[in-house]
Every structure is written in C-alpha cells, then in structure tokens.
Image (tube, rainbow, N blue to C red; front, side, top):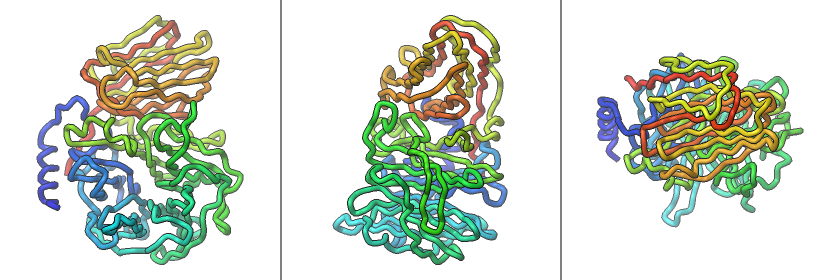
Length: 479
C-alpha cells in the first residue's frame, strides 16, 4: 500500500478549492475514500481527537484504517492523517471500530482487529494502542477470542470507568444469532477479565449489536447505546436497514445488569445515521455519528467523484423526561458567518425564501395554535425534500421521493407539537441535520441535488414565531 502517495494526495487536495456542488462545507469528510464509524472520540492535550474508520484507497468497505483529525474549536482542524494500518497478524483484514480513554498522559486506543483466513472464516481480536506525543505503539491483543456461545462477530470495544474500575463493553452475536453486549473489567486497563453478558429485558432485538456505549446520564441512570441489525420495519420506527438507539436504566455492576430500563428508542429518525459514539468532556456527553448507512452504497453518488460519507456535527446529549435530548455543541455557534434573516411574529401564506447559499443554519419556530398541518419544502429548482407535520395525529413525515439522484423514500415518526413546531436545521451541500422540538427528535439525511439553486418554502397560512438564518463558514484543514 502506497501511503506516501496517499499523503501526497492529501496535500494536493487541500491546495485548491473543490468546486463540486456536493462537497460539504462544515461537516467532516475526507478528500477521498470511504469514511464510516467515528472512533476513539476524546479530549486530549487541549484538543478534540476525532478518529474514524477510513479506507483511503477507494469507496469500498474494505482495508479499514483509523484516520484522525484534531480541533480546538470545530472550525480549524488538522489535516487528516492515518493512525492505524491493517498490517499486523491480528488486524490484517481491518482495524475495526473502538473507543479511547485518557490515562495519565497517554491516549489509549481500543479497537477490533479483523482477520479472515483462506476459507473466509473470521477471527476478532480486541486490541490496544498507546498514543502519545504524536506517535503510537500497538500494544497488541488484549482479548484473543469471544467466550463460548458467541460467534466471531465480536467487536467495537468501548471503555468506561466506575468506582475506579475499568469496564469494556463489546458488541457480539450469540450462536443462535441474537445481538448482545459483553462486559469485561480491569484494575489497570491492561489485563481484562470477563464479567459477563450485559443483562437486559430485551431478548430478540436483531441479530447483531454493533458499536455499544455505556454513558452515565445522572447520578443513578446509565444509557446503553448500541446499533442493532436485523429489526423488522414498522410504520413509525425501524425504517432503515439498520438502527441506532438506546435503553436507559440502573446499572448493577455486581451482576452486569441494566435494570428498570426504558424501551429501545432510536436516536435519529432520518435516512443516514449509524454507529454513533459518545465521549464525556467538561461534564457533557458529546455524540458524533456516521452520516451513512451500511449496505446502501449505491445510494451515495459522491463515490463517482472518489469520496463517500462523513460525520455528524457534535451533539450534546441531555437526559430529560426519561429520554435523551440532543442539541448542537455550543462551539458550533462560531461557524456563523453572517445572519441573513431574522423574523419574529409574522403571519405568512405560502412563504418562500430564496437563499444564495446551501450551507446554512436555520432556526424556525411555527405557531401551531391555529394550524393543524404544516409543510416545509427545501427546493432545488424542480426537485425538493419536504417535511410534513400533522398536529392532530402527531405525525412528522420526511420525504425525499422528489429528488432524482440518490436515496429516496419517506421516514415517519411520532412528534408532539402542541403550541409550536420547532426546527433547528443545519443544511450543508449534501448533508442535513435537523433537530425537532428542542432536540427531542432528530433526522440526518444525505441528498444529491442537480442544481445549486436553493429555496425554503413554508406552505399553508401560519404565524412564524421566529425565523433566523445564518450563512455558515467553511471549516479549515491546516497543519
């Protein structure tokens, strides 16, 4: 593998401005290749470290490396670099996902080494890396095999600490093809013992649980976040091929059980969100997800130009009313370059806004006291994406069937909006992230418009309580 050429291509890419109309301006994406799961999210030596799965050699799900960008403000980033390469006996077919933990002055990375033999039989190794002063050392295999009763679909280690004991949670599949999570524990973060399968009241929720996280949401409650595969689609949930969501309950460390937990709730109701990872900094649980979806590669047309997928902007998770609300990290307000609209208390009828940019933040609050149906359209000449809300039925519908390129379909979810419908939207050149009702729900989606033309249209007669729109600046990739 010619890594020297890869780094030359990175330098060359950032020496000019990419004019492709689908290139995103303020979302993390790579100059080339395929990006998927965020990995090793952490705050270390005064910077946010954002690792991610990256195949720098093409737009296929193979040759998985760990890439890295660092930032202090989510505006100025280091140029992408390759940190982990699949070149050891224990990771030769891919350095798969995992987490990180800062211990003393070292950033410890944990990942799954993927190995396949000549018969395509899989072996999965849980591995550790020490990262310090810009260099790293693979420490090798910590856990060399899954316990009895589970298949080799055994991956994505994440670390958390409680009562000065280190815990590792790993996604796994049982031999009777059910998704589960396993817990290991350690006194020193180097030697691990099997503590048991995480016990929940969930028995049959898919055939594999990927990317598990355990996060503390208050003094008594923990959220178990994971990405189950194999759920049957229903009208208002499980509408993607794979899902990501959480249970919230009380974690008993003696028998590794999550007790009195909620039902599984999806974390994002859009088309293109998977494999989120959460880390804690400054008292905040911060989440970044993958903007993409496995096994749907034909929908992502940017591959024709040599790149695929990206990462969400950082979201803060807040526990309230027994669910996780999401909001943009405060630092993202620094992306606002100029305010281009500020309306309050205005009655409109089929109101439209022509915008000369498709890289905006929009905060919209619509009065629902005298309205039962609202339709919002994002128009690109003769194409559009719509959001329809029915107050009486409490149904929100996201529809991208009227786009020519890329993935289509609708996503429907339940949403209560009695007095007003609140939408906080980040619209980039081919990514959208939308927060509903102060982050009670979100939708993330990819779109590929034919035209640079952009217009927002509010159908029906309605009172706009508030409408603010900002142009957002481009993030920079420097040294």
